[in-house]
Image (cartoon, rainbow, N blue to C red; front, side, top):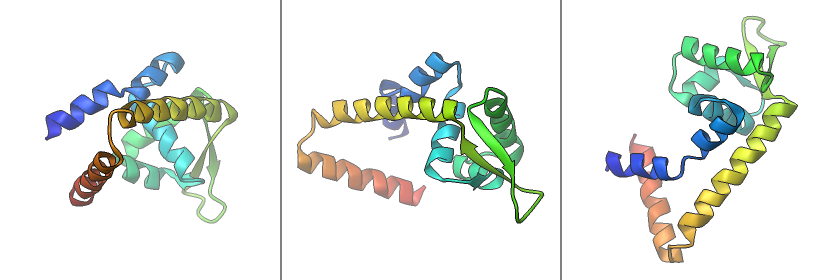
Length: 131
């Protein structure tokens, strides 16, 4: 089962493709996706969503900040915490990621009946729930 999941990931490698275009790792791309989907997220929350230690998350955030893909601002309530958001360059990259992601999903859906698509969605939801 895991082999099938990994094979799907490799065949629909939008994070890797966009990463090459922008000179980003797949972790960088995933980080930007998480930031885009969770406005004003903290570093701690981001690291948790990505399944990373805070120090590993911090290294990714620092790299993206230095490359001007994200903005890092001190939290107004808790000065020990920072809030993350995409910069303009990050938004442009994020839009390219979305375009590639949607194209990959469309290629998959083109070969499925609505019933098959529904079964796959249910199965994937179940896998995510138990993991």
